[in-house]
Image 1 (tube, protein in one colour):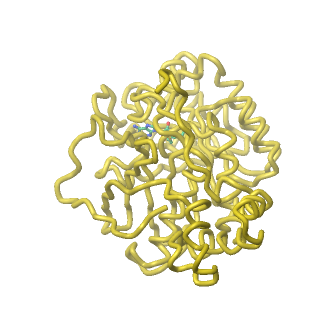
Image 2 (spheres, rainbow, N blue to C red; image 1 turned 45 degrees about the vertical axis):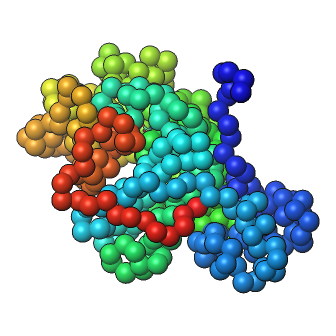
Length: 378
Ligand code: SAH
């Protein structure tokens, strides 16, 4: 085998293709083009990729069609659950052995899936477990969509406590920097939000793309005509500290990132979410709350404070409850909308910044058994 090969590409899948490309692919396989629509209904509508269930396709060509257009992309290696089974983290193995994670969170009023856009991450934020391991590779659109389909299927079939339901929200807050894998993420967003059978039919407004602040890509996203929410991982109001917490800040400074965010808000009419992980004695001082408020007051923005989740080997810890309350109060006092994000999934290392694959992880919390998955997953 030649050395230094670039990583192999994941097999082509229906979810990598737009409707016209799918029909062309079905025709290439020698069948009528409408087979593509039938397959799409199975995958995006009925959430199945099992040829045995596709009884509207001729028995002789089911396996070939499904094999060519619905190859299995991800295999569930392990599933961990907490919160009575309403929070579930799945570790997936891709065709080349790359490991990624997704998290499903059921709330009384919504079901959110947190998906990965890359195996690993190249952004190197020192407080994030994913950032410590570096980037393995970009995921394909279909590998991103497959995480959503698996969760949607589990919810639809009643596997998640609370009865059958629908995934309502998608957050690109799993492993990876979504805007560093722009083309695949964009395709995945279209597949997730296009109506059935072109896609899964989840509302664009329910989708959040979270970024470290890749300024040119934010500008590009603003021009896509989408209504998805943008979240910016700010974590510090000043360049001196942000250069350390979010190293890409050395390239695009706080002022440029926020300028791009306001451009996004203006283009889409959507309030930008500003993420701020509160790290004890690092970025949680009252003066930084005031500085953040000064940057955001009067803007179409909302602050999501995230108590720092512990990661292996990190010297940092979450702010005290008193410091968090003070930080929140200072923002609110200046009219900046602010909420504190819950730390769902932290017992299973499934909360923000804790997704890393199995290497170097702490042993999972004792009382949480790994669930075996028996169903075929895409
Ligand atoms: N790369 C993207 C999306 C993934 S992370 C981004 O950075 O926005 C989703 C959010 O979790 C980001 O705001 C990230 O900064 C935050 N995060 C990372 N590690 C964390 C930790 N240990 N505790 C709390 N939040 C963390």
